[in-house]
Image (cartoon, rainbow, N blue to C red):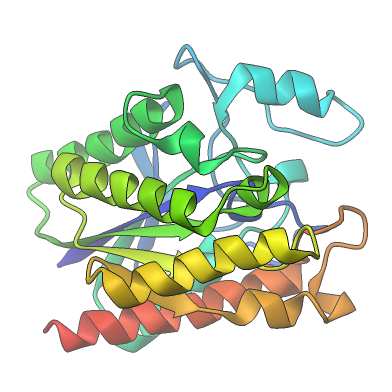
Length: 268
């Protein structure tokens, strides 16, 4: 049985670490690529660069393209500079707990607010298209699909914009409604956002994510480790403020993957 895990969010989910730590393929895990409609071994770096018109884009690499230009053109992005992303560590930990196999669908882009991922936006459209195509490919191959999960690491841009707790919870609810209807998502796993603005604006988003996981059974808090990692220099990207290092992303992925794996075991 193959579980499908969709990874959404902004730059820390896209991956903006300082190095490529390792790229050993994760056993029993594949990554779905929309541009080729194919499954490839899951390893760092993760993701695809897809323009808003659905065509192949270019990877973001510091010094080679202006970030503003890249963001304007692209709907989804691969790990910046070809470096480490949390998805392999997540899937490795997940499979160690619950076994089976997994298909990872990476659909993230830096500098996005939650409003950029809601139904009827270009971001949601291509996220949904990629996930639906992955599910269709599995069905055509007669694979037995187990659970479909969505893992969310996002909120830094909403903190910068000063979004309220109430606003963010309303948007998360709208997103979950669409994911459950359009993709058959069984649970929305939250990797709780860290401190980005370093003031009370972060608290609004953190509180919203904590509360919705308590109040809505569709949401599952996977880890609150990010705020602790913010205080560890070795876990933060020394070159890009507010972003996790390769080590930090791997720790986040490992903790969150184990938590979702334990949830999966409870459903068997």
